Image (tube, rainbow, N blue to C red):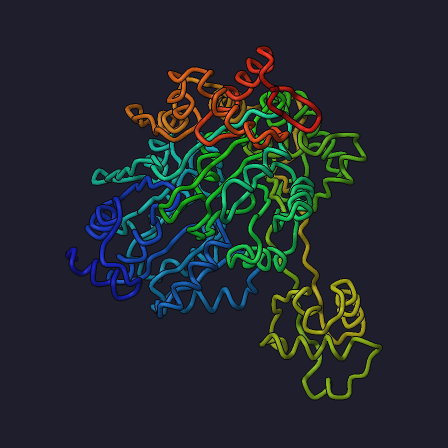
Length: 633
């Protein structure tokens, strides 16, 4: 049995801290004692230390299941810098490199091994797992195992199966977002034993002010907020094109910004993320693809230009502000159209059952799969081409495919984080005699200088990186690699982010398809409830914003935060609108014309300002022109 002093000594030796925070030590004690543990900790609560510290002083290997490739890579890199033996296995790695890591794990080379949940379905991984000495299993983002969680991942349902290989190893499940219903699901689906313990850390963030601004001009409001609140910021939008548009607006307005979404290359993701992390760009404009595992403590502001579709998603994204404990702001810009748009997502996410049945037939026609055939066959699925052929909309098609997957008829896998691969077909000596058109020699030399093992196995490469080394464009490098492939100098497999559809069972008549309540009706109802909770959060004007969110997560006795827009508005209510009017008159007393942006005040709701301006105008005390407001003598 390990002691608190051992835990503290390990913490100080490797991380330099002299004390644990919140419920960290309680979780560490219980997992080290062999208990199954669920840790509920808000973003920034220090989840990683709850397993990294006990992993170092436990005998054997800590196996961490995480859905986030960027987080796995980042944590392994940080652990290696601290001389802690760690590794990760994720999509995009060459099979030979995966075998090396697995063999090293079997022979005890690591204290921590990170894997994706999909890896647990691999036969080769399970065969090696039998021979690993596992100290305990960690399930990060554990809410993904629940059908009622906002981010359900079917692959998480296989996690409990690996307990049969190491039945005495305890399980530590961690999440930053879980309702009481999801908590029950996590414990049940991970087969927690009778000794299981649940540790809850309040989700309250005392340094984070939640604000909802109702506005019809979101661009102007965004600029005003960014000019009012200094420091690093994240701006979340729903669509990929909008990330580019908003970043362009900010840069043209003198605010340095980058954009980020799942469609940009891995190299661009790394470059932009590092630039933002280092402060070279102040604002990251992004879809929800950005943020998971990003450990930047000094984010002062997170702004949402669009409504997320759940409180859980909003809480997690907003919670990336103020992880250093200093005053920060989470601002949601909202208008009436937002709520209507969000409600329409229900129909897009859960199209009618007849639509799903019809799509099932369209897919069979597309791939020429006859009734009673197709089981086990996999096809690449080109969404744009399919939608053009059948005059369908991608959003509903993707939703229908996901429902067919849940129902067990198809397996639709979205584009994976794949990489290009190269292996040399010639020997080094033969390369000395190689001559080629312009660019070939430079690309070959760049490959040889940058990557090892090219003559023995396929090696993941990055065309963007080779382009930077050679000074060529990425497209030119791609063309040269294809030419080298035709000349049999190399075998080049370009990255291929194409989703796939697998027939899990033989093709049926569409009337034979059955969608159980668990697959369709119950999930649709749950989705509607999540959306309505988000709409309520944005539209209500009576309850503390923080209290509304905490009640959603089961903390029903939370005190008002005193700093959200509702709390601040209520604090100025007794002063009446004439006091707000006096503040406005004081600003206009200089005799100048002031734009509306000058008449926004911290702690005073914009609705109060609007009413006071109207009252002053009606009383003939101020005038309004196209340029703004001025005092009438």
